[in-house]
Length: 181
Image (cartoon, rainbow, N blue to C red; front, side, top):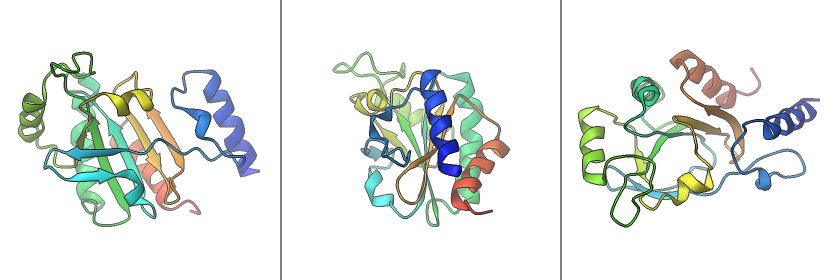
């Protein structure tokens, strides 16, 4: 019954504004997302596949977005509350600075300015730099922020288009961390 409901929900959302690639759906309705291999603001390389067995929240954001500016401090709070990526939840941001080579990337500032913005804003969770815009394109990001929560098996469980309250984000995280509650 639960699988049928999920399949129906995914189908309905795919007919509306569900802007993620559903070509990665298996026969049971499980959606896998494209892998991400990017470097964060501290120079650490992240590979989404390395986090299998953990719940992963990926938040795509841009510096000019007022909704992102409102949501990012909440993401920082959640990052601290859930153990700063040392426990069962991994929180990652993804940003896409402009450059001479990629002037059409979604942010309006370059990497150097974005690094300063992240530091000045105290966004301490890892923000991965999509310098080519490839990841934003693969995830079909067209609204900011956009948040994906992936379960321990690597399947998409929650997709949020736009900003939400901290408590709503926390409820979504908990529903994936503790699916049987």
